Length: 260
Image (cartoon, rainbow, N blue to C red):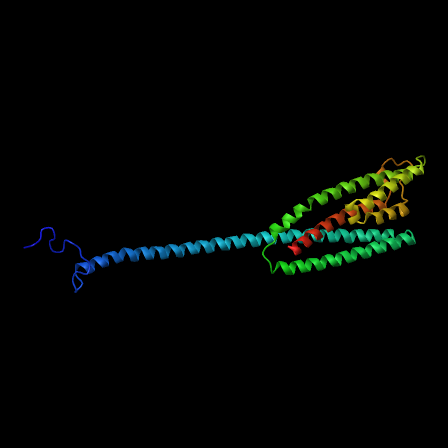
């Protein structure tokens, strides 16, 4: 008699027959969705990998573009500073013809500038060689440049103070009524400041001041009321110190990048 609770082929028993009957078909029925799931996972992982590679390539392109932009700006600024320093060297050389001692002092300054330019070019070449071997340094460069803002700010304030004091000193020098002692007091104060201030010492301003006090005898005409028309050598040195601030800033940043 048939069991009503277990009619033929109602209860599913895997592998109930040796010849692969209903139980085998059930196994095949389970295998199909498993294969589908495996195929889906394979397709999904492949598409994900494509997206990852796509994003990675986009990141590399953005990073390379950012680095090229930084390097282009860096080279432009360095080239401008070099041209400015070269132009200043020519102007200083013209002033060397005034006196023998003045000419000798300017030649010394010119040699120092040439050596500074050679050292700067060597440092730049070494930085470029190392940058080709290291990861992009754009963010690190900007970070170090921001750290130099405080030094640059103090240097600009110092140069403004020296400009005002030198303008006053030259005005007294060109005056026929102001006592000579007042001018000597300003000169002494400037020399003390140049020797004690770290920024002034870093720019070697004491040497330039001594040169100005000894050789800058230029005055405007008798009826001149514009103080900025007095003096000639002092204005060249003020421009020279301003350029040296920029050059030293870049050299300090380069040194920090190389030591990183």
